[in-house]
Length: 167
Picture 1 (cartoon, rainbow, N blue to C red):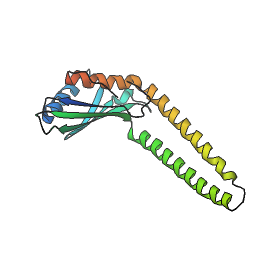
Picture 2: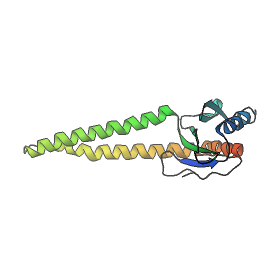
Picture 3: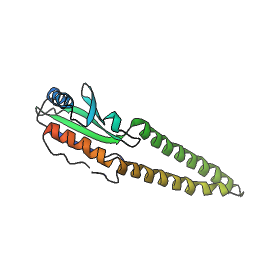
Picture 4: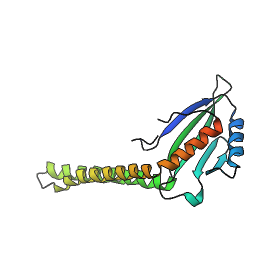
């Protein structure tokens, strides 16, 4: 299930109404042996590992339930990802690196076109290396949280009663 994708996902059509799926999940979450907790708001569900077992890289499973118009079923879209704070940190890190590289490029090429020294252009590959390091850190974190991701995935499959292919 763990892959080179930053946020693995799945989509599954289930021949149940949204309310039935929510009820299944609510009932299963009441079991004291369950390895996760959940928050359900209408057709959006977030499943997390029990608080006492969570760590910095603990994943969560976000489920959105959408009615299928041409049948009496529900499409469940699942997205695995880190805590939103961790996700935001990496997202903004990439944005900041991209902006810095853009400004270094603009300033460096302006200097270069004026015939002046444009050593600032060496920052662009440095920012690329930093972005690659951030990507590998994220992949390492995903590997650290892989077992908990499997736990969430198996909980979902057990609740729904069907296998799910993650891509």
